[in-house]
Length: 365
Figure 1 (tube, rainbow, N blue to C red):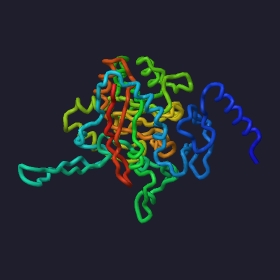
Figure 2 (figure 1 turned 45 degrees about the vertical axis):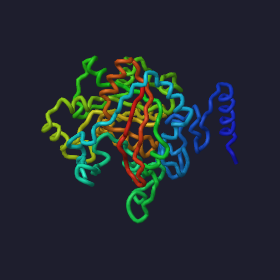
Figure 3 (figure 1 turned 90 degrees about the vertical axis):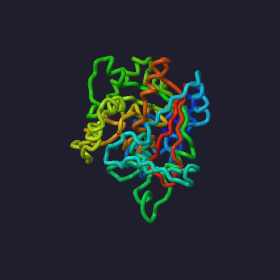
Figure 4 (figure 1 turned 120 degrees about the vertical axis):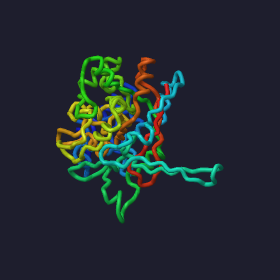
């Protein structure tokens, strides 16, 4: 029997929606075209899922918050195309020349088909070695060993491997929408905030809020009176590439090869977004379709908490994480135009069973 109180609350929400021209997500699976979604604190507990999971798009959903990139939102995002200027966000495939986190470097081989007449080439790469999307197979909810939407290691590798959370699902859906850049590195320079992108430095919500304010943006979600719309794609420039380009090759290699282990004593150390409750609430409640940065880990590394933002974003919410994007030219164009919103498109790799992908990203102004 339905809970009378719950039924009454649903009916009241429906009446409010009618009066305000909204559409609130009330029952799972959520309709991606809804205009209002629950906050993190309002999430229902999903049977069989870890606490805090937002597996809300259906039992066989493997694109997560990419669902928010609906035709109506993509069409609205296209209004950001005004001058037609194109800015790519991809580093060369061989950059960094020595990847962090013990990953294999990119190798390129030319294959002769007919000398002086025809050639092929062969790429050998770890998709996590440079500009990358972390797919939902990349990082689990560590306490339960569960990947997004009840996917497990046995679904990824072994006799029972299948296509659950494979990167090809993203490729088949497509990625295009409104991007927003928070240029924290430039803000820090102007405000005299000193930090090394090659060392642990947590960028708090408060700092990101003031960075946005400095750019003329209220980074709160639109539902809370801010400028962030459901389905926006977030970019945060923390200065990794600026620091990378300023260092000699031997120092870059030495820093990339620092020993890697899970935990606070990890030798891999990078500036990034802070692990804090306000950040978690903001990332969830904004309903970004994806988040990305120029740092090797997006979040500050190593985490000084008992959790990683990767767990929340990838495993619990199904929100893609982009890392090591080239945001230098993008930041320059945003400053030139005094525009921090733009149209963004990405073409993930169409690989059945794939874990992650090169971003193949383009911003259009």
